[in-house]
Image (cartoon, rainbow, N blue to C red; front, side, top):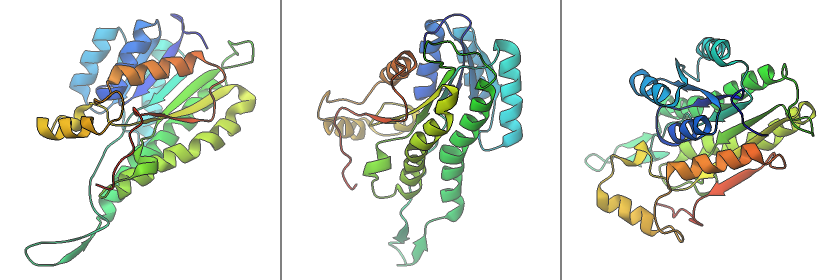
Length: 261
């Protein structure tokens, strides 16, 4: 599917990291982009930079999603592109023992639920509502294509490390829904893909010491560095362009395989 100045796109988590890079790339290529995020200050700034709009949206709240979609569509028209980048990480072992007392503590169910709500359920809530809107569009490709949805999973979906029970299972869920949803939407010309980023330099890594970041980068076979957000955005752009990409999850990871810890 080609992008022109009539193409509307929505990027969740668009105020930073992979989402910001994707929003900037799509806008640079001519799309009219709406950013969905909770960070109003940063989101408004990015939107101004790219000539798009910012919508404060909580992807776990149906009313918030519907309000964001209504505003984005009023400004840009029905989106043909949705990129789901909103997500969080909470590191916590399934069971841990306090060193001082030996007390055994189970994983917080509240934290586990929060990660799954944002990463998995939020992704599904956005894609289902976006796809419903895409059905109103006329096809724009020779094959009858109406739109493209790109979800963000993670290499943790298959290589989950210690302390990643919530994160890995939420991202495995995103990976798992890619094919069935692509099949659900195939007759209506809406493609669905997932990207599994490896170790990318995003705001999640900013709190790490330099030595820790260097150690992580050294574990990537080639190129031996952390991924750049613009490299994720480039893959999104290729997925939009290549109509044969559908129902698949692509690792973008420099051949890294995560160690247990």
